[in-house]
Amino acid sequence: MNAQNFTEAAMLATVAETAIGRGRRTGDVILDVQNISLSFGGVKALTDISFNVREHEVRAIIGPNGAGKSSMLNCINGVYQPQQGSITFRGKHFKHMNSRQVAEMGVARTFQNLALFKGMSVLDNIMTGRNLKMKSGLLAQALRWGPAEREELAHREFVERIIDFLEIQLHRKTPVGRLPYGLQKRVDLGRALAMEPQVLLLDEPMAGMNVEEKQDMSRFILDVNDEFGTTIVLIEHDMGVVMDISDRVVVLDYGKKIGDGTPDEVRNNEDVIRAYLGTEH
Image 1 (cartoon, rainbow, N blue to C red):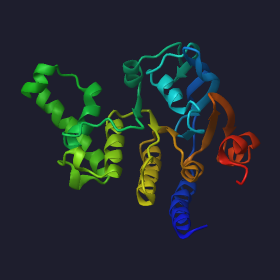
Image 2: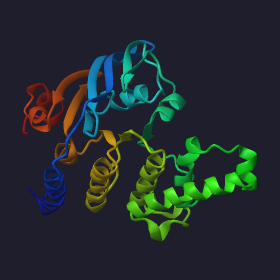
Image 3: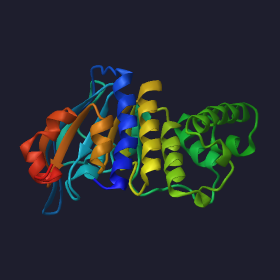
């Protein structure tokens, strides 16, 4: 192991020790995915995928590039409509769910490619996550009149707490486009948290980050799960992070499920080793 890998392993081990020490307890099934199949023309993106997510857990979805991980998240939050299967959220059964309906029910999402408003400040970007919570009409919001003004102040107070939580106070008025990539990722997380989700879907939250940024993001994910009680479903390619912070892991390969269980069970699964981890592991 070279010096860089040793340093990264040591830093992520610190996060792992924190996760173990928290004694996290998971609850009943909050999200149940059953027999989902998704095709684009003659290309099968997902084939008969089933798994569940328990309340308060960190549930990881892993697999090689093209395995269908993002497609699975897109089915959960209503971007794609699968041809077969169903999704149950808090006991309510859906054949199909649209994105707005999913958001209103309490499912938020971050994306692999950042879709922030680069010319807007950190605070204003995170404020957009409060849109579904606002009761005043657009005209009242624009005029900031009476109840609309009081409502906006309450939402801004909530957003300020998220900014403090994510430790980006010094950048609250900075246009997002001027921030380093790692901080932009935090803003993206903050916007999702502003929706007060019950389930948070994270699509490669640490892609493109250096070791220190990965450590910070891992800590924030664990804190969101621990302090807010938010259930986390994440896609991540960094196997060290996945194995350290996840309660359970589902593994996809070419759109099919080849493994599901605790990190140790997945790490020792022969199908997973052949398809993803590599025989040297």
